[in-house]
Image: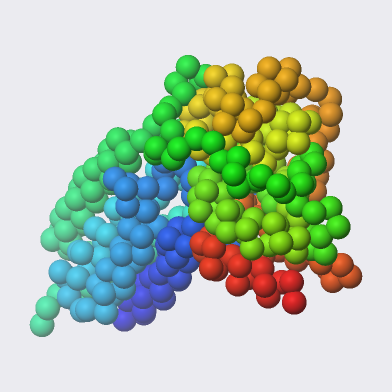
Amino acid sequence: MRVRAAIAALALAGIAVAGYLTAVHYAHTSPICTTGGCEKVQHSSFAELAGVPVALLGLLAYIAILATAAVRGVGASLAGAVLGLSGAAFSGYLLWAQFARIHVICQWCVGNDAIIAAVAGLCVVRLLREPPPA
Amino acid sequence: MNRNRLSLLAAAVGVAAIVAVVLIALGSGSGSTSTDTTTTTAASAPQDTVPLATTDIFTGIPQHGDTLGRPAAPATITIYEDPQCPFCREWMLQTFPAVVTDYVRTGKVKLVYRGIEIIGPNSEPGLRAIYAAGKQNKLWNMTDGLYRLQGAENSGWITEATVRTAAHSAGANADAILGAMNANSVTAKLNEAARQSQADKVHGTPAFVVQRPPAQAQMLNLAALDAATFESALDAALQ
């Protein structure tokens, strides 16, 4: 139960970050940024996937993870793990892109990377510990 | 921990790996706008077919160096832009005409241009061309002209040919602009804009700092860049 609660809390944090970046994207404004690179990252080709903002994809993924945390059972654990691990892997790729291709750091992206990494870890723990159906 | 759970974990890792690879492949195929490429041979086409030439907007409005509008206007908007910035282009082409009509032409406000390099290295020749056009009091026309030719970020679209075309649409002397781009006075303008952007805590473009003495200068916080939103925020700042 505590693991599911922790996943839900982190998913809500992820929804806040991804939701903010999605809103900024569609408002055509710049995110609040102390690292100085957020706009450059947001305007790069890595910010969209087949025309869909990556922030929106992240928002949808976090909502789905939140939903899996709300449901008991191995199926929900498995779905959460797939979402969390997929998200963490893709976030790792985007983190690499910031360092190696764009050469700037976006605080929101790094914050999201930390959240999704923690979510992925907890989802794996949950999958391994979820009690079998009665 | 039973073997069944480990099998599930292995399956989850496998599916996640496939999903991640697909996402990365999709991302790689969605564009080649790597922001570290500075090739000058891959200048891309303009993003759309916005027509050239907009001198009508500026006709009859005083323009001196980087300033557009009546010098004695009671308020000043310092505008931070990057010629490669797509949002700056959107603002310039969609909202700027309304701002000029409603505030600059009426003498309420004057605009001061501050060009800063935000997107990448290819912004610098654009900024230099814009400030060089300021020597002919065509800075704002040149800014507009370049936005109408804007290509993908750091694709190398700002070339001599681009500058010539933009200068033509701006009604400026292209040879004089190209000759002045590396002048010390232009470099000084770039450095001044960079220094002031740090002082104003500008982290992105476009950014708008409104000053109406004796009130303190303030950054406009905009939820969107359309004319209605901009003018509403500007009205609040000017009160």
